Image 1 (cartoon, rainbow, N blue to C red):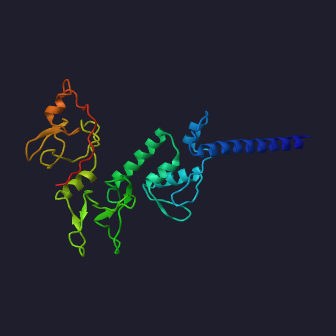
Image 2: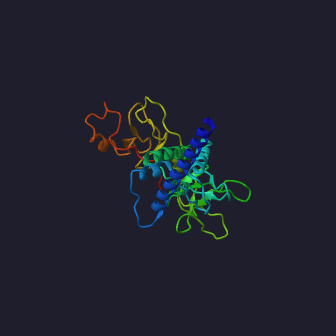
Image 3: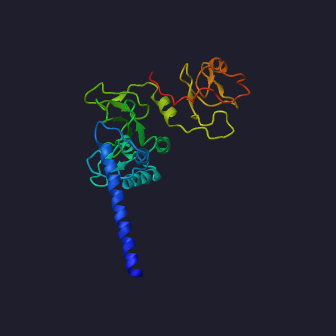
Length: 274
């Protein structure tokens, strides 16, 4: 009698699992129909967890969500942004992978933070295209050496840019190797690749170790324990956080010298062409 009860229970569980999978498959098919919106209480759950969703890869191969997220986690753990199809080994760009993950906004922010940290730690390996912001790996020449310039195949038109400063790479002579169009290439390269201030007691923690003077582009570093710094070349004084002049920045603060933080967001790493 106990054996019959056990068999009945197992059979009941199998049937219940089949019914649940059938319902989830129906919800996935309904969501995939063009011109219709996904409705119902389980729609958000499906988008966040990827339940019953089989994302379509850029090369046409289908990966189940657990396999896709496992591949992404493995790459990020190894500090790699080389996402490769496990079937045909075609290279996938991060934007293509991110579009398949079907994660919530909060989960996407977490992954984007990890990706940005990897790019910051490996500036000689990964860069963002200055036109479409796709993440690119540095190309190698025929001898296996890093190329000084790169091009993005994901942009609607072909363009070449300097790997160090992201400025356009020009070819004045068709037979030559070309050159960077930026006279400040070495300065911008330093600004893009330098480390950040990690001292928790600094008023400019999180900012790049080097900033360029907004007036003359001379490299400078934080001075004393203030968010304001003076250019040693032209004496221009500016906020190391937002890059506005001291006068403009101080106008936003009730007491800027007692309030080390800046009301404006931290300025991004500087890049310019001279």
